[in-house]
Amino acid sequence: MTHAVELPLWAAIVVACLLLLGAFLTLVGSIGLLRLRDFYARVHAPTLATTLGIGCVLLASMLFFTVLQTRPVLHEVLITAFMVLTTPVTLMLLTRASLYRDRREGSPDVPPIPARPLPKDGAER
Image 1 (cartoon, rainbow, N blue to C red):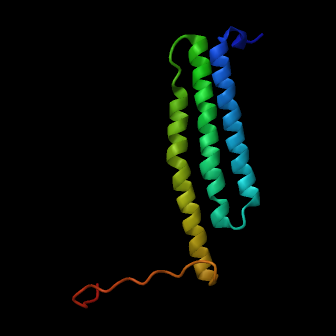
Image 2 (cartoon, rainbow, N blue to C red):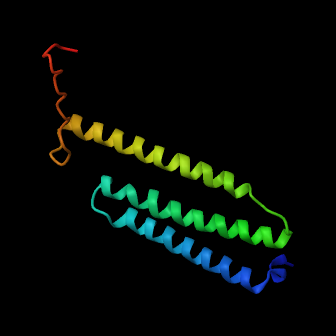
Image 3 (cartoon, one colour):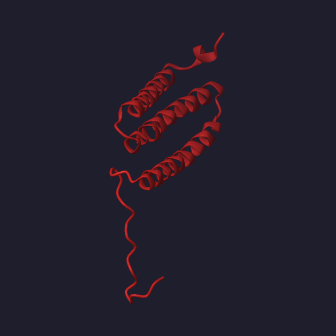
């Protein structure tokens, strides 16, 4: 019914450990999303912990299928590359949009826009 029976014990242990670690990190990221106090703290939990959790699951998948098929299975590397590239960009865009909105509304919880220093000669830019 399943080919997982053919997996050697050493590979099964490593795959299981990676899956458990990935599930734990994803759970921590999800709990952080629910429990942290404000948007700026809350946005970091899923982007950091969940990305590491997905990375562990992808490593487990790569190892599992590489051992079973006796050839390198690397298509998960593409998924990992997309995760590593898109997650920080999404985090940055979300936090900048939120910071802009909070500054426009005059929220006291965010720092004001920093003043731009004048050039040394005093001339306007």
